[in-house]
Length: 496
Image (cartoon, rainbow, N blue to C red; front, side):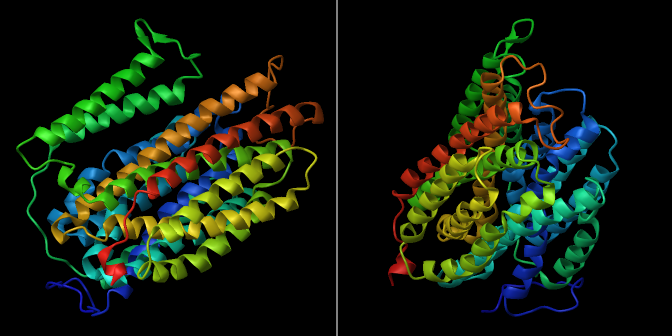
């Protein structure tokens, strides 16, 4: 297939196949995913280095939540920016921001400074992610898009392996700072390849819905901040008349106002509501929200259990995830090719059920008496489930998007996924703290100084029970995704 390429004096070569451009974009997408998984492994070390005096997990979780919040809020408009100014240009800008912010993260000497740098990193990632999906949508025909999205989804599987393993080696051997420094050379290489290989696509004029941006940002901030800090303030008063629940309720009201405004505005809305007339687009967005919630929430209790209750190093913890990453990386491209000729539910229903099954098995094994090697089994099951989840959902959501709305659709899809991730990060932190306090009510320091080796046996057992119960939250939540994908329809192109 010949890609619709306009004149690009900045490119050394203009490939007629869309695959080289996709491979170039996958490098940046891979870096974004690695950066999420790599931080989950390093959280205990970051807490020990930058926040050793407190026992509240919410502080270190903001290293992830700030990134996800800054990532989620601009996605809607960055998708539109790609339609207006070209996905290549916005992608390159985002990659430059992400790479420089990675350097800033590594140089941070306080937890607050790291959180700010992570927020800037999230802004860069927000510019990049919608462009990868938009380029696939605009350069691959619907009947070949499954294979391309299979590669896109398979990238997540490889990142699941490289992120934790690289994080473990870097944290153990060089220090947590190097999980961010490693992004710098990768970012430079990715920038050069994208500049050379990604074509300039036709742009479309769009108006930018500034009121919509502000309303969505306010709504997300209030909801996430309320969930994140709820346990800290015992779900009560924060300051004066402001309480945790008042923030959450106000955020929900503002979110409803945002959706009402999007449906009523006469200008071009930030969220084109007509896209949701496509049944598969609508239900894929519901499903990807549950996936984002689950994937983000599952890693925190698992890593704290392995490193704090069982005394494994970051590297040893990451090695247990090898079966998951290998299975996802190998099977995702195959699943993508099957999806070009099959009903999406054939892959999505068993894929999501396998993810839930693996998390329930992890929860059963999260105790001080089970050999950690048994965790290789649910790890492999989780990888198979991931292969039937990421690519098929993205393909189903974007298959019928018109070219001029490709960026908007990709922005909505990734916003929904990231909102799920933000809520998962906030909810899992509050639930973890709740379970720790329930199992260790008399301990002044229930989990020691998180990240400083294995806990004493008298504390490790109750702490393990708390982490196992915490894992049940993402395990149950992903089942809502199973319900959502049951409402999908078989695309006409697959039927033919």
